[in-house]
Length: 152
Picture 1 (spheres, rainbow, N blue to C red):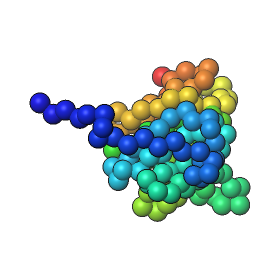
Picture 2 (picture 1 turned 90 degrees about the vertical axis):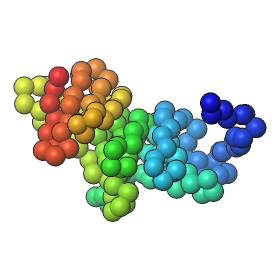
Picture 3 (picture 1 turned 90 degrees about the horizontal axis):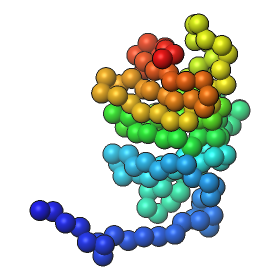
Picture 4 (picture 1 turned 180 degrees about the vertical axis):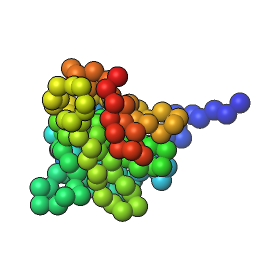
């Protein structure tokens, strides 16, 4: 049986002096490369490599920047791209190869009222579809191949 003792772990307190943009963290995920990603309430997302913190925020002058700074809910997709359920910016995806963000908005789904793109949770299923839970407008399924949303 494999056992890990507590003495094999090292804990560090990271704060603004280490490059943290926010103290309000809603989620933490680790990608296949070992980077830690932090989703914040108001200050975008941050990536920590064990030594340095990088911050990603919305910049209206850059179309491939983070689409919304309230980006607290994160998941790592099967392709190792970062998936972000934002609180006002719909679904965001960060492609680690191109280092660009893509934003997918839910405001034009047939048969539904205009929604506010406030997503609280997300998960990718085995087929690669992304399921999004909204604040008060229900559940949505996003097909990355067709880039279509479906209200469930």
